[in-house]
Length: 260
Ligand code: NAP
Image 1 (cartoon, helix red, strand yellow):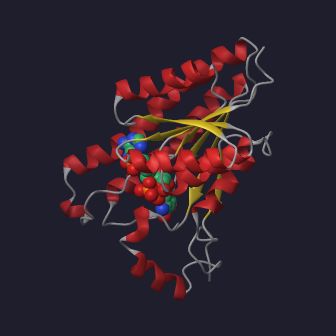
Image 2 (cartoon, rainbow, N blue to C red; image 1 turned 135 degrees about the horizontal axis):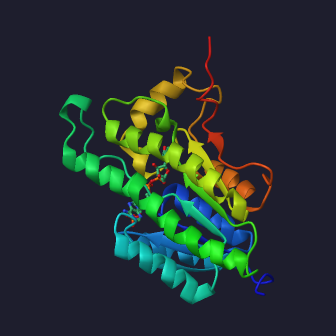
């Protein structure tokens, strides 16, 4: 039994933005955290330093979630380092490199965004949950969890980045499918749906959203911050939703409400 050991989380895209806030929040609560990144090693090291300075334990692992070999390395290196996986946070994601109208969207952009935002998380989850099931059955972990960082784009049309919206709508079904399939093993599957959060991803469209917030886009009239999302993930990770699975937590300032 290694139940007394500290729990282990993999946070994909844990080096910057929302993933960084999630990694730091988990580290502060005593989780051992694998901070995954793809290209920006400096950012990953900076996140790990911050985590360690706060007394946390973790490591950085480079892996492109869109790449099958990389996904396997990510899982294997986590198990080599810590021997268990209690939580996978599918956070890594990308916007299209260029915003293009739906009628001008290219197949290359569609394939790239779908590979990073949907196919990658789907097959990474498949790899991780096979390991989780074995660990549960061996009595080494209990109630492991998957958290998908989705988006209001799962149900909101943005015609200048349709491939992103399609990938996030697909992630909604991915959450439902895994929740259904994995409940028998005590594996909970959840989704957080951030609204508009201040990160590198949204920095290029800051002016547009500043204006929309001022015009009343959301009942809570401010930008979201990565820590807003991290708190929701922490609530799931720390077992505050034990009789829920497939659940969607909107972290969007009320954006999802229909209003008159
Ligand atoms: P961000 O600031 O652009 O950071 C993206 C993170 O993902 C970085 O750590 C990046 O690592 C990593 N990443 C990107 N492609 C990757 C790949 N192929 N393999 C592994 N890691 C990869 O993004 P963010 O705003 O924090 O968004 C995080 C998640 O929240 C995404 O899934 C996004 O769709 C979702 N979301 C964001 C917002 C928002 O308003 N910001 C709203 C709703 C949902 P490198 O730097 O090493 O490439």
